Structure formats: structure tokens, C-alpha cells
Length: 65
Image (cartoon, rainbow, N blue to C red; front, top):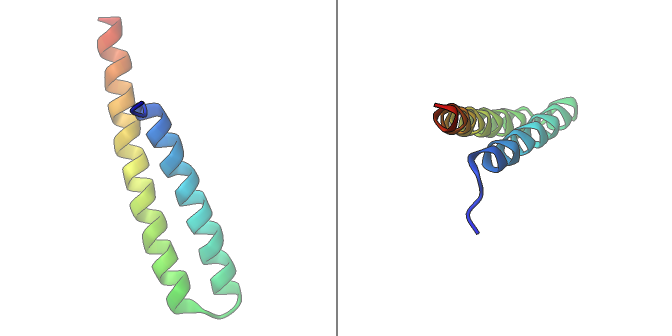
């Protein structure tokens, strides 16, 4: 069964939060290259979450018209 845009947005928000936490941990350990890569990944996940959120909003809005 395909996921709804809401579910996909929530999944990518969770992935972004995890990547942010892992980046903070790596940075705290002095591993700045890993922290940078994890921050980049978190940004990518956040962008995808935003796109899925916009899609979900558009579907809700369309269903009310």
C-alpha cells in the first residue's frame, strides 16, 4: 500500500531529526567531516519533508473544494 504524502513527510522529518542529532554528536566528538556530511543529509531530508508536506496540503485543500 502506497504511503500518503503525510506519512512520507513525517518519515523524512524523522530522518532529518536523526541526522541532525547524529551530526551534533559527531561534531561534539571533533569529527567535523562526518558532522558536515550528516548536516548535508539532514538538509536533504528536510527539503524532501517540506515537498511532501506541500503535496499533502495541496491534496487536503483540493478535497475541500
